[in-house]
Length: 130
Image 1 (cartoon, rainbow, N blue to C red):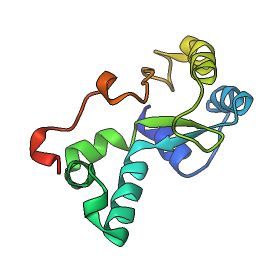
Image 2: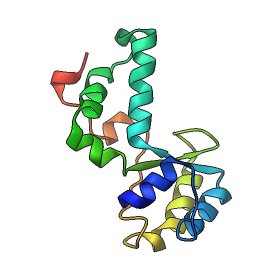
Image 3: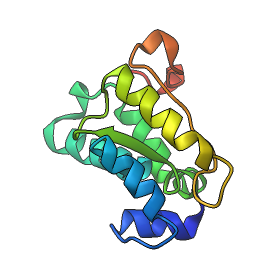
Image 4: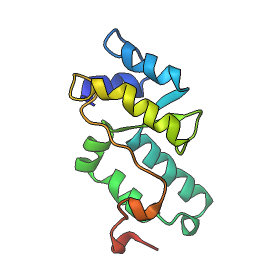
């Protein structure tokens, strides 16, 4: 997402340009969560409760402390549905179908679906695993 729109979304602001995106999200009880903010929240929780119980802490902390990665992740958003990061395939595919026409436009640069099976997702480098 371009930086100007990312700032608006992170600040819970709206604009005429963002309204079509928000209308699609509303159909699914969806909310955009900034990936950087999610990473920072994960680290804060790990630091408060004990890093040993958070296997991705080292990787996540290294990511948010890196200015280049921070610049990237403040513009990357995840859609939560009903407050959940993991949700039914029907909602995921419905969102993708509805959002696909926006891809490549002024707001949605690209769109990806991920499933919750770790075997189907990239894992952090070994140096960051506990």
